[in-house]
Structure formats: C-alpha cells, structure tokens
Length: 408
View 1: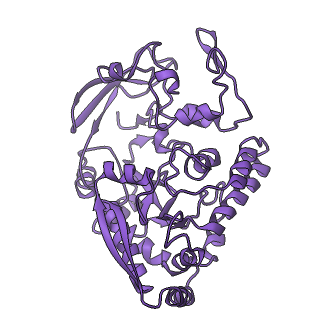
View 2: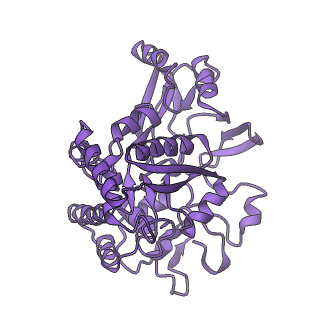
View 3: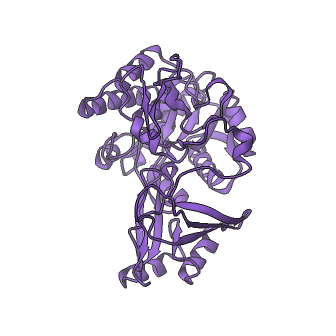
C-alpha cells in the first residue's frame, strides 16, 4: 500500500484510505501461512474488487521497487518464459499454480503491435488467435462477415477508461462562471462526437457507469446536451455565450499529444468555435500533461481517466473529493466530501446506489467537467478459442487460466 517508504501501487494504493493503518500491523493481520485479515476503519464493500485487480499483488516481504525491475514475482497461472522488449512476451504454464488442473493451455505468446491496422491485419490473416480493439471502418465489413459465418467472434464491453469528459478549471476565470459551463454542456453535440471521435463505438454516459451504478442510456439521452435533435440546445448555448461575451472569448485548450486525445480535443475545439469561442489547441507531452493537471495549470482540456474497480468509492474518491489522488479539476465541496463518506460506509447496495446517484447529481449541477460518451472496447477470437472473457476491468488483467482450444 506504500506505507513507510514501501513500494506503492498507483492503481490500488488508495485502499489504505479505508484500512486501519494506525495498527501495529498497518491493518493487515497475518493469521497463518495462507490467510490474512484486513482491519477496516469503516465498512468498505468494494475491498474484494480492489484486491482482485492486477496491481494488488502479493510479493515476498522486503521486496522493493528495484527488485521488481530485475525479475517477476507472483503466483499466477503462467510464468514469464522469455521476452523481447517492445515486441514479444512468452509465457509458460506454471506447474505449481495453486488451482489444481489449471491453466488449460501449455503457454501463450503476447505480441506487441503498434496501430489498429497492424493488429487487425495480424488477426484477419491468422497470425494471432486473439486480438483486441474495435474494427476500423475499412475492416468492419470483413469482421461482420466472419462473425456471421461463425469463423470468429467479438466480445464488447464499456471502457474502463472513464469518465470521459471535457475538464474545466472552475477555480479561476472564465470557467468559474456556472452559466459558461452550462453553455458548453448544452452546446457539445454528443452524437456527432460518438461518430467522429469514437467511430460509433461508444455509449452515452455521465459520471457513474451507464446501466450499473449510473443511469440508463434512455435516461441520459433525454437530458440537456444529450437529447436529439441538437438544434434547440445549440441555439441556447450560443445565446448564453453571446450574452456573456459579446466580443468573443479566446481560450487555450491543453491536449495530450497522442492521436486519440488530439482527435477528441480537436473535435471539442470545433464544437466550441460554433458557439462563438476562439479555441487554440496546445499539444503537450504526456509527462507534462499530468504535472500541469495536478497543479491546475490549464483552462480546459478533454481527457478520459481510467478506473481499476469501477466502484463509486474509487470514482468519487479519486476524482472529485477534496484532495482526491486524481482530482485534477480542482473540485472541492465539504458537503460533497461528507456525503461521499456516508456513501462508502453504506452496505445496502440499493441504498448505496441511491446515494451514489445523489453525488452524481451534485457534480452535474456544478459541472466541473462536461461528460462525453464512453468508448467501448472489444476482444476478438477464432471459433476454436473457448472461454475467452472480459475481466471485471482491464486492470484485473487476463489470467487466461480457463481458456482452451477445441482444435487440439
């Protein structure tokens, strides 16, 4: 958990906010060689989720970060056999795996490729048995034909990299003006965003995950800024901005300089220009993006965050409570923080969802960020590949212990 100078996991270390770290054992009691007990300071129903992700690993006592860079540690179904940096990772069956009879495969190779076109070409020519990613526009008919023929299959799920949104620095002008934030929420055409930025591979989404802890697609599509046709919302957004800034408004938009993020920021910039705003995009390197975001050294930027558990504890606790580890929008409200603590301590799931939705309503009323559709993800396999699944999230990682082949 990163206590007292230990190795910390950036993705799962936030569990220490719920664990009684003031105990002599830091809240982790060793019961016997195969059992440990976690002592909490309050109910935390999502503990099992965070313990299941790939970043919550059990490693030998005394191992620190430099040791992890020398050799792998773990107890999974496969062992790292060999690797070529940036090209190939080869895994062999772990004969000492703690689950009898598993894994079914003798091993597998993980090939690293750059670009959708290259990945899909490898899959469509049977160079690989399994691949990930939504089909490109050119390849979509080919995938559809092979799926219809039973040659291949495709699994889809919402992205774990969410919420996806236009982030506004509401701690300073001009976005400390709620009416301006509301105008942007009205003016951005989400359906066009879906088609242009996400090639149609997305679902409507707010803060919480759609259809899970959050609202249904139908409920979201009836809301201002999401409803179609878009004309009335667009006209109202233009009216507000014309009233606020009759001489126009110049804005600089920070953008992570990789293709996906640039594509999203360029589309949003175009939408805002339609409203009468003059937008200049400022591409910055990934390392610069994060450091500037942490310091609120920006005015506006389009980004999508990634979650490891998809629980409301992580969502609100990382991005929206005061001092949250990834609260890069500067949002702070003591009443919200108190309501968050109450929600995390709620064990009744129906009541917990009600409280989570109330937290979402608070965020949507303030609009420190403008929600955009969440992209979807896909996995492909040939028909002889059996029991290929999506894990709880991408960060749970693919153990591949249950996958088998029907052709051997």
